[in-house]
Amino acid sequence: MTARKHADREMIWAYLAHLSYNMWSDRPWPGQGNEHLNAAPHLRFDLSLWDDMLARMVEAGLNMVVIDLGDGVAYESHPEIAVRRAWSTKRLRKELDRLRRLGLEPIPKLNFSTAHDLWLGPYSRCVSTDAYYGVCRELIAEVIDLFDQPRFFHLGMDEETFQHQRHYDYVVLRQYDLWWRDLYFLIGEVEKGGVRPWVWSDYVWHSPEVFYEKMPRSVLQSNWYYYESFSRDRRKNERAVRVRTYLELDARDYDQVPTGSNYVDPENLHKTTVFCQKHIAPQRLLGFLQTVWKPTLEVCRQRHLEAIAQVGQAKAAL
Image (tube, rainbow, N blue to C red; front, top):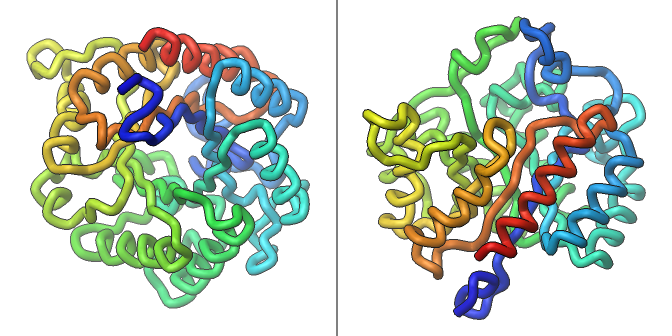
């Protein structure tokens, strides 16, 4: 069995890209260099960079693009969500066809965490209401149709804490059974469309007993860790719980797509692939996801192209 195949299944080598980047703060985020964290009323997406990113992905041997859609699409079910210059559904379908011809599997992402749902517009202030459930249901169904029933649907669901919303004007937190009730609702809507749900796994860092009791094993997990040290010793690595989570998810039979980034360490994805190949059972290691956490704008070109190249290097090293 090679690093590229697990049980006759091609390994995922994926890149997370953003059509919309309206998932952070509803007011100016303090600190130099954080201007992209502020919501904008228009689409922030440079096609020139996108085209070059796709070409580099193909060259580097990637086979999947996870696209964070947000309010970057003028959905037929809820056009009121769209920002100015949002893509039409016709344009999105055409682009998805192009990705498939390039050998890149497109996967949709809509982040329903209350820390990252500004893209929902007025509905981000209707969380856990009948109106909210109706909008989420209709958007999920429409996106599944637009993507021609994709293999996965990434629901986000990360960082729903006060700390992550401390600079927002409007703060919303779901806790205890309400968070789980809404997650189960979202999972159910994805599964109705014959698609497998995918989430970020960071809830488990803070509430492992609840997570392992309640999280369905049918949900694909992306634990994420972006730092230099992969020590599991808390005395040597203050974020060791995140590293240990890869092993704990595996021990409890969850399928994983571990996620790295050049956000902090340019060697992180390579370190992630080496560590996870060693510690996660092949049948549960579906592949890897690279993140950069920058909008698809020319000003961020270098970071994106470096991140894509790092995927190719990590893949070649296995």
